[in-house]
Amino acid sequence: MMTVAALAPTRNKLVSALRGSVGAVLRNPQLTVSLVIIAGCFLAILGARFITSANSIAQHVLDRLQSPSLAHPFGTDQLGRDVLARVLYGGRASVPAAIIVVMIGASFGTLVGAVAGYAGRAVDEIVMRLTDIVLAFPILVLAMALAAALGASLAHGVVALIVVWWPQYARVCRGIVLDLRDKDYVTAARAAGRSWPGVLFQVIMPNALPSLMVMAAVDVGRAILNFSILSFLGLGAKPPQPEWGSMVSSGAEVMDQWWVATFPGLAILAIVFGFNLLGDSIRDALDPWTGNRRS
Amino acid sequence: MIGYTLRRLALLVPILIGMSLIAFVVSHAIPTDPVVAILGQQAADHPAIIAAYRQHWGLDRPVPVQYLLYLGNLLRGDLGESIYSHRPVIEDLKSYLPATIELATFAMLFSIAISIPLGILAAVKRGTLTDLVIRLLTLVGVAMPIFWLALAALDIFYLHLGIAPAPGRLDAADVAPATITGLYTLDSLLAADWGTFRDAVAHLILPALILATWSSGTLTRMMRASMLSVLPQGFLRTAASKGAKETYIILRHATPNALIPVVTVIGLSYGDMLTGVILIETLFAWPGVGHYAYSAATYADFPAIIGVTLVFGVVYTLINLGVDLIYAALDPRIRLAMAQGRR
Image 1 (cartoon, chains in turn cyan, yellow):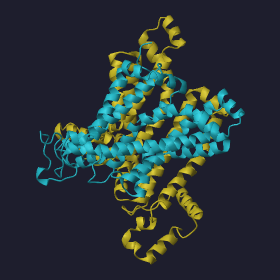
Image 2 (cartoon, chains in turn blue, yellow; image 1 turned 30 degrees about the vertical axis):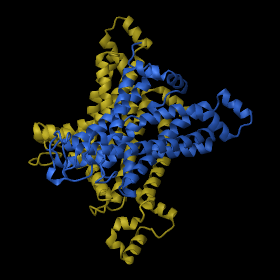
Image 3 (cartoon, chains in turn blue, purple; image 1 turned 120 degrees about the vertical axis):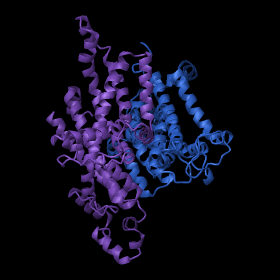
Image 4 (cartoon, chains in turn brown, yellow; image 1 turned 60 degrees about the vertical axis):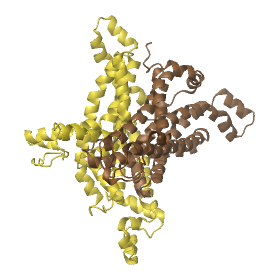
């Protein structure tokens, strides 16, 4: 799992990169492939009922553990449920959960980081020591403890991940704000008599947000992987609701029937890979140094 | 260097206090009723038991006092008693930790052995098909749900091909070597018991390789990027102009310089490693702390979960401190910046 900080691009390069974004997408095959993968996954999840008419929860015990066939392209699980339907509808748990984690975690972290970067030394110290402490844990281990303490459920898994997710954004956003606060146009806005929230949120933040938003978009993949780990451990979505991590977990009970665990695992791999590829191509576009283009 | 080390050690104190605070909040404040959570509903129906329990653990005192009591217990190594095993959590952790250290160490060694050469190769062959394949592999690596990969590997290499041994640390027929370090490979070596040593290594290979997936991806990418920033530098041209061979320049001059920033990433990768251990140990019936954490989560064994979280947090923090110190020893610029008060 890559860290968010590695993705933090410099702002000016980013803005110019976004300007030529349509052209860049067409010129950059890696970016195109990543967007196709992500869009494909989203379309399949949203359009699940156009792909299969099978029900993801209905049990047909007589049809249990059937290998993939025309009627059940991904086979059936221990309770005779259609694995294809469960993979598609399972995405409706994992993906929105991950998006919520990133949206709330990133928004809160950005807000905290912005205030820390602008409000001066005392606030900054407190906030940064707090992020130090959360980041001193392997974040998923802390999330696991939280989810267990709250009681296993999808909502609690999401809450646990949000609690460990925001500090990374707080650090990056603080860094950007510290970088921008002494720029001439910010000094000018202060001199013109703007209040400090005005300067921070109307002058500085509009310039900080684009890179934070790209970071967040790419981060969804990592959140999906982490949420599926919580679910695999039994601390996320609960049966009978389909969810990729918990499907792999129940597939582990029937290893001879490889299809039960294989397809949900492939779903996680595909969508997370798509997001990582997206992050990689954006990084390349911004930083030719580590990119794959010949110099 | 001594000043830097002392400063870093001083910075450790607030972090450790903060970690204990988080553990306290999670274990005391969050469950709707920690007493019910720990004693179970049956005991909770008896007010006398609850009152006795509250008094014993100081839960009838004000919250700040409770925290100080908790901190005092932590400092004495008292992490509470596991609900499931009915043993002190610290004793459980002590007995499970060696297996985890052994697995994680092998995984880290595999990860380094895989990623450093791949990273160098990708950087040297930048823009070629080799580079593309390596980069795609690293992206697959960091995106991999390793709990799923572990299942697939067990299915293929153990159940179907029969190449890999059964899950666990040793074959059923083998007796664990006399405990010296608790690491079976090391203990059997010290006892000159080659059969057990071979068996212990055979059991380690598959879980350690899978555990290495995430960090191999991250480290390869870091090594490639670091190598790319070193390659255009002047001292390599100087070496080339003196007639040194390309391979020699890359391995002797470029690689050591490129390795320095990779060292810090090794520390950060331990976070993934400690997370992965929970998944891999569970699937490979590996009797370590990760397996313990998984059963604790399954049985809602709070003292055990919090104990693992704290221990993993402290281990992760100390590893990163160690890595930072190595980094500073390798790169004088870091020490200098630190001495001047910049961080």
